[in-house]
Image (cartoon, rainbow, N blue to C red; front, side, top):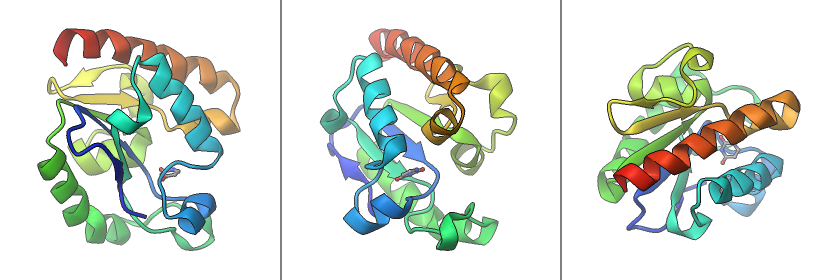
Length: 154
Ligand code: URA
């Protein structure tokens, strides 16, 4: 599942790995998490087609398990190439796998809603909010903060 979006995107969004729906349609974030992500993109005042959306691991991990460190390492050059080509102003890291793979950040729950190194915005993965309803308010608040950051920086 390759990334998709605008080559001129100022905001790039990075998830964990495609799920079954994404694997079938060969597009990122088209299942239940994608529906919530689309809503959050609107909360941040953006349009999906003006962003660029991809994932750390760009294939469906068998049985929908978490990607391994080895799989993350194999996909890293493809992720880095996309970051290079798009060269976004803001990179939204969805969840701990993305935060760790891109900036080595751990303990996302301590730092969600924060901009790191003036570029990387940390938030939870939408699937965490699909699984646990109370997280919907958490991700929504983060994307409201992102809206302010975008107004200031983009
Ligand atoms: N979750 C992800 O992290 N990426 C996708 O493409 C879909 C769901």
